[in-house]
Length: 353
Length: 214
Image 1 (cartoon, each protein chain N blue to C red):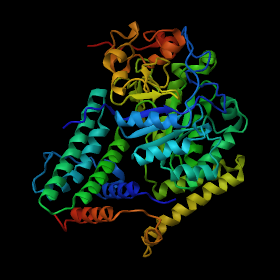
Image 2 (cartoon, one colour):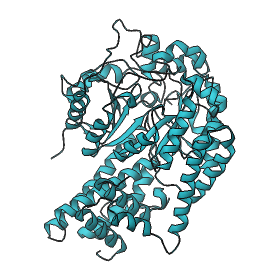
Image 3 (spheres, rainbow over the protein chains, first blue to last red):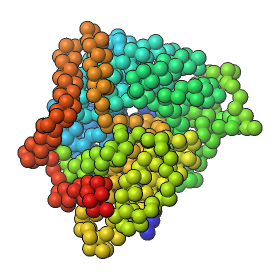
Image 4 (cartoon, one colour):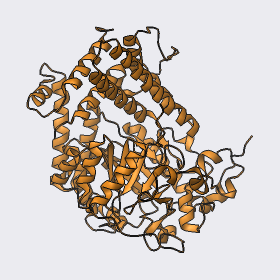
């Protein structure tokens, strides 16, 4: 008999909203200036038993084999080991997204023992001052490199995440080489996607389409030179950047509503279509997972496409980019998200033939 | 760090996949054979599922749209089901213990997932870890580290250098007569946790693919 539970490729669990860094590009939806909503995003977290109950329910009600633990900074949550033990008992693969600050050697060893399969760690430049400035946290660069070294030494795996902003784009090649030197298994080249605290710095940080093209040229050449896996998971609209010109890079688009979606559970049990949107589908402690992701609830998010994209041949794939960024920055899921909005006069037509 | 039961059989599955296809990268060869293969005995079907991992990798590489992505995921699931069905036939025929069959299914599922994940394109926040590091990559790493070292914390650099040196030494040992000794020592020291069923599944799998039980 077919298992009727929804299949999730991954579930993102924001274990805490607390963070020990103040990244300029942070997209966490609970920051006060994160959204143009009349109601502020709910803040807080459940007590010690809460995360276990939440995850147990999520895993019971879905077919999910991979959970990404993030925050805020997930290592600030004292009961993180218990959460990891639960995931390990359930044979669920685990990724931790961290800024690396608290990943001391004993902590790394403990986390690897508890089954963490992958760490995603920021590497925003090969230059200390640039990484620390973007993290708004002195010492961040040295801390994350130490974390990478511990993971490398203890046979763990990590990927470096380079958030591409106007401030660090010239450092991309140096960061790629540094990531490789430390044994990174890949690089996530994520263009800055305004949201959260980052919304206030949109003009300062958001690269132009032309700047992204130059960065992609650098990344594509480096991927070929070093046989290194580089993925661009924040959508880059093909009308702005001809992604086929970079054959050594992987490009992703919004997967909301598909079984590749990365539904996001916040520390209070609220479920969202993704980690960039403040849209709450409902609370998992109050309703079954299947009801929360029912088509009628997901439809406003899934079906939203900017009017500008209506005639485009790639409309259904690209969906206009990141609609959550449009929602956060311009108040509507169908608005043009900032990267498109700021560059669309240079868009090449991709009309249906 | 000990290897858990799941990790033992997972490692076996991925290691076997790497025997079938070098570094889990598709060979580029054409596989036009039907999903079931020519030998329709349960062992033949089982064996064919493993050989089809190359086809799965190729399909994953050719994904060009979300619809296409789901088709390939479906193909992967069908491969799981075919593998499970062949195992069930062997269990029903009394040729395989059910617990061993379960372990073999875990090995195959992990191998297929690894092959698929290593070749399919990514989506938002989905990293693409590659679980193998070749010796050339380590030498490249060492050179890049040397280049960057002057501006970094010497203790951190030293730690990474030690890891690289250890891994290069492992490659060199793996090519020599001592190959495998470290693993055996780990196993005997109880650092690798594996159930009897998992060990039997690993033996069965190796024999199957070497043709001794086919």
